[in-house]
Length: 514
Image (tube, rainbow, N blue to C red; front, side, top):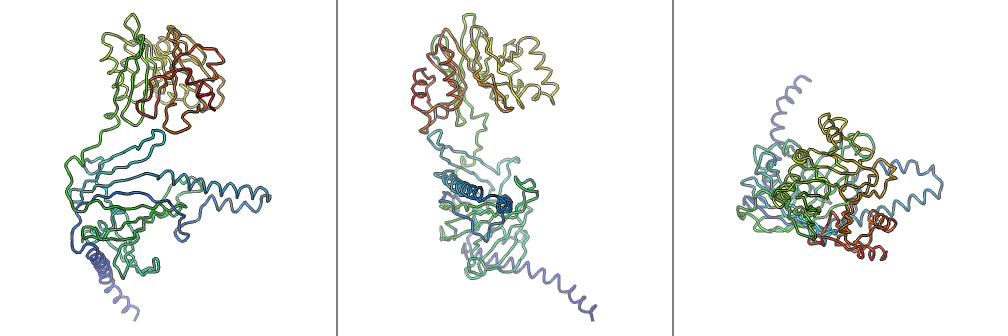
């Protein structure tokens, strides 16, 4: 009898499995038909903005390892300590919530997707309080092998249903579940080699939930791997261009504490895009631009722009047709080549005599042409993990170049005040103690009564009129040493069109306004 039953089960299993596949496929096709009316989604443009986040639902949140540890030791602590820790925890929770609100304030995303040709352009606009204006980032995928097409199924449930309806897509029917008081089909779909859980309401045939299984092999607290889930909840479906699409999307991470809430504005459905829509975005190197601005008395400022940040370098043209350059070290070979090519093109028939660096040099790979010109490099000594002994310990070739240049005298590393070709190098914090505490230096040109200093006082936010801790130390050093300064050139600026230099009196006013 047992053998007879076993034979029947073995005979029925393939049929049951096939029926399960058919059932899942038919449900997906029925949902797709309900949401599209038989139309095919070939392209879409979506604009995403953010609502205030809210606390995660308890049923979708897993225990927090840190909080569990804290709860376990709390009873062993004195009442006063427990009260203090609780107050700190409540304060941190409020602070995190307010920070998250600020992070998403004014943030906007746009997705332009050509499904038929498998191309996507992602555009993100974020407020930058330092610049006082939005920053825009753009990326295009699906046009090169390095950046293949990414299926936008988490943003567009109709697109996911089209994948599920295709016979080539693996599906698995997992049963039914009660979601928000409504019975839903649970169907697993394999997308790009990973199983995704979908929930489709039985009554309305709407895809209302999507779940991705995640794993963190090296969590910040506790032992890995740590398993968690990302939930995508779709609601407020409306028919747009004949297709039912959600106007609201909530993203929940089970190991987090706040739900990210997105408003979805469907700008276009099944409309063609202009060719320039998917034009590749310029690279960081391509965006970098340099221009040279005359200052006075054979002084020039080199301005680097193009990447939402402005760097300034100072060039002094000497009588013997040599140049002294004051700058932050550039550790990017392409950017360094563009920088020095700009200088060569502007100052013809000259060579760089001295290169005064406002920070320690972590690499001389971007500077081979200057080495061949016998340029002298002057830079503060790195400390701790940025010391030359640590930086070049595992690179014998760079270590050898470094030692040869030092022996020739073309590489001057200092940690105390020094003078080089009538330029005074001052060390503000020669008493540094911690491994991460690096030297803060500035260069002083006595004849011009000018200082070149690493810093960024030009912000768009209100406290830009106050001195940062480093700038305050810089100001106090100038006053203490009675250095006769009239103008200061800072190496950085967060805003465009910032002044090329600051008067010492402006620095005094900022210091006294605190």
